[in-house]
Length: 87
Image 1 (cartoon, rainbow, N blue to C red):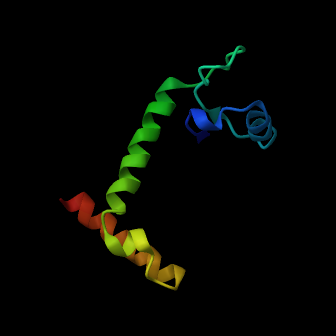
Image 2 (image 1 turned 30 degrees about the horizontal axis):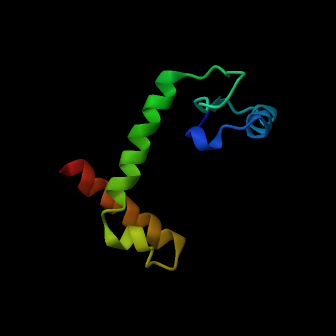
């Protein structure tokens, strides 16, 4: 599944996702005449992921990506996630 907001509502993107075997979870844009069905519950869960990224970006080191190595950056994200979970 790929959850995206209305800005990504296009027939070309939907067709590409379906061709790759991905289910698009994109609400219909208000100007769309032919409406596509989408899973409203899956779209609501997208907000949880966005809020998690927002909380991670409260840590300056994560938001600005000071670390040069991917392993160090991943460790910083892990530590930040533990702190967020703990609080």
